[in-house]
Amino acid sequence: MELLWETSPRSIRDVMDALPQRPAYTTIATVMQNLQRKDLVQPRREGRAVFYLPTVDREAHTARMMRHVLESSRDRSASILHFVQDMPEEELTMLRRYLKQTSGDAHAETPEPDEDTARRRRGSRP
Image 1 (cartoon, rainbow, N blue to C red):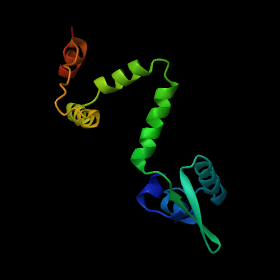
Image 2 (image 1 turned 90 degrees about the horizontal axis):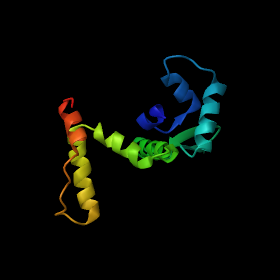
Image 3 (image 1 turned 120 degrees about the horizontal axis):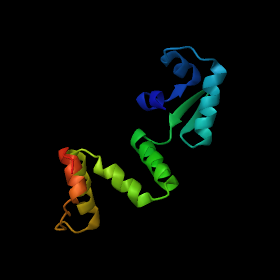
Image 4 (image 1 turned 180 degrees about the vertical axis):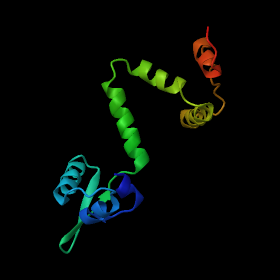
């Protein structure tokens, strides 16, 4: 997918040429078929050649994978909280801004982190 996100469309031969090792043509063809089955690429025929284009961008794919991981969690809330508590401050700020914008309440107050979360961000121990 990385190669297709870099430059697309690409044929199987284009993908093979871009890789440092030389996998078999059938190996790349199988990978492309699997990606197509998962709705990640779309084939486009030009004469005898088939070119593949990504159907989702890198960010949408990452979000899809994150949703999949959360759906497999037994405690989705705990998983989200663990993920967020380890985020760098600038990403937390971006998330807070986004949540304020989408909530429709530009004056909503952002709750302060609990003591354990604040301590972890400071790098302190209890």
